[in-house]
Length: 322
Image (tube, rainbow, N blue to C red):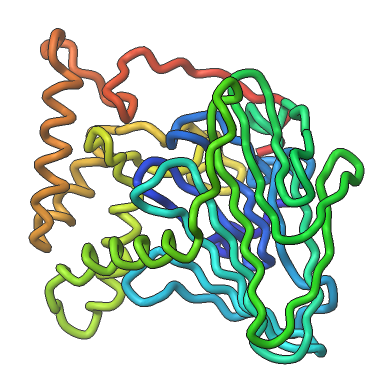
């Protein structure tokens, strides 16, 4: 069952995005673009429709969450009776199609459990899972493949992949998930520590340009980071949301796909950028718009794909409860 919407935190790399719940469950992820089909869709259904949970196995007494200042690097601290440990989640910048999750022991000894259920095509496709070695697992469905590299041994469990491990104070366990085409050779593993450093520098360079606007500067900066995460770097397009099929109000029918560039919504984002001096993002969107309408400017649409696509198909996913 999905968590409350307010319990989700955003991860992103300016090409796609993920949502992580307070309990350490990554319940929404689309690769390689915002509008690609989801490989984790528990947000709209249940655990069997795709998620990646890393969390303590014992009762959690307290949970603290925060982003590293000026970044989109999420830190979740779990406290149990046995100790405290931190889960660091981020999507690396300067590379495509990766999620990195790092477990760090803070005090005592904490046992963690891993529950991975990869489900392509919005939870409808159970992939062919193959163990390449003790620490590498691939999941294939048609042209798509996810590669999990784990520091601990993994085993199958009811069409999920599971594991248990401990972290002592000062100990680190690094997990990486990578997306690639299934017909290409297995890509090399990224350097997680270097990726963390590069990603932190990217977001801090962006957020440090935010001017001082008074007592709410921290909140404005955080909002800017969120808006930036909703931009599609290759083209300059801006999505209205990183999710689909969530109604505007509980029980409502307006549960459309907002992972496209709706011109009205993008205009509001542009105003926020320009009011704070972020003109590069505004210029990139203007260029995206000129390319998108080129050829048929007299038939301008209310929305386009992040690449400027015009034919956007609407379809139902009846296996998801929404």
